[in-house]
Image (cartoon, rainbow, N blue to C red; front, side):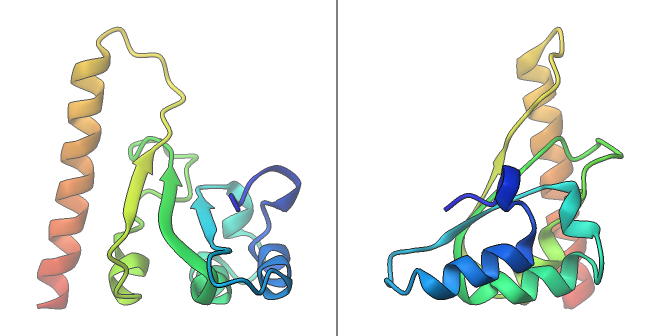
Length: 118
């Protein structure tokens, strides 16, 4: 189940996941602005962590409006071995260069977090 649209609030998804009691019913995270509301991203992430399906969609890492500028700390703290998928919404002239830049930003953020934990 993807956290999206009218189900973008993580507390709502926590309730839905609790009722979807099949072991293969998992949540796909998304970088929604609602993640930052109320008690904030870390609190909301912890709510859905038991149902998290190890897949997170994020928007461009250098987008100041995106709540997932660096999702690494939460994912590393959860011992998640899943996937972070870029859901690019911009339309750069050179898509290959833009994708390379996003990968580099992600790798740099992850390396920084790993170094800080060491």
